[in-house]
Length: 209
Image 1 (tube, rainbow, N blue to C red):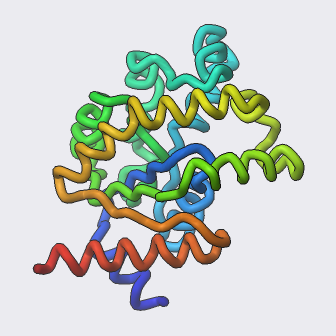
Image 2 (image 1 turned 120 degrees about the horizontal axis):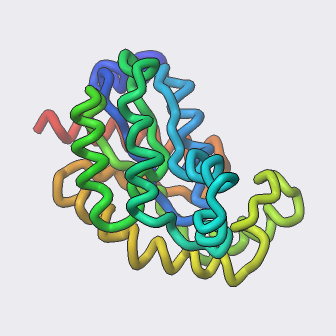
């Protein structure tokens, strides 16, 4: 595993990997663990925006209903994080930074300008049936901090619709640029993380040919 980690580190440099997937696909779980494993810094647009919504009632209303944040607010609130001086010398693992069609171009530009060019976009592939099962399980064990956007099934349905209509075109942009890294996200957390590491290594290998 150590050789594999070093391979990923050398390939990534101070670049970034963006992680996408349906709600409950494990974006933050995988992203945090990946960052810890390769010595990167983790940035989640969801966490950043949920912190900002405490001072913005309109943003709170949108996100609590399962909708993506207004794209202008995303650009104003989230994009500056990419250029933070304390992150300059580190690779970044991003959790769904730029989820609305059109935002990906701003993310790619901002990341490149900040010295963190996007080297890959992971897509955690999980079925809607599995998403709904994980949502039910999370309601029982309460392991997500009682988030407002986790409370009602209709909100989950809205989040899924937002992903399909607004985020899938973003993912298609990354695919067309040769950056997409699909990962099977069914299974245990350890299995999904192993799948992620293997998929990144395969992506690196594919770039050699």
